Length: 88
Image (cartoon, rainbow, N blue to C red; front, side, top):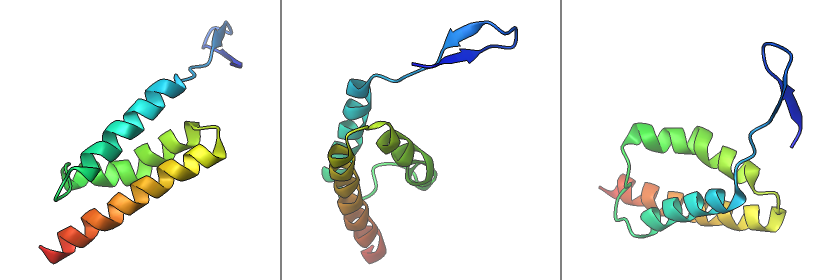
């Protein structure tokens, strides 16, 4: 962790998320998507996940191979759910 300074010039530790929590969150999201026959979240949430949450979480995974695997799983489910939404 690197030091950050607060408004008063005091050094504080930067937040560094637990990678196990990141993996659990990704697994929960992918699991919900895999078990769904339509998007399991409202359209605004899906947009937030696509634009912000998934890129952020994947950026926290330091192992490139693992990040690539998660990205692939998410992209597969996104394509599948988008196709189902288009067919409906």
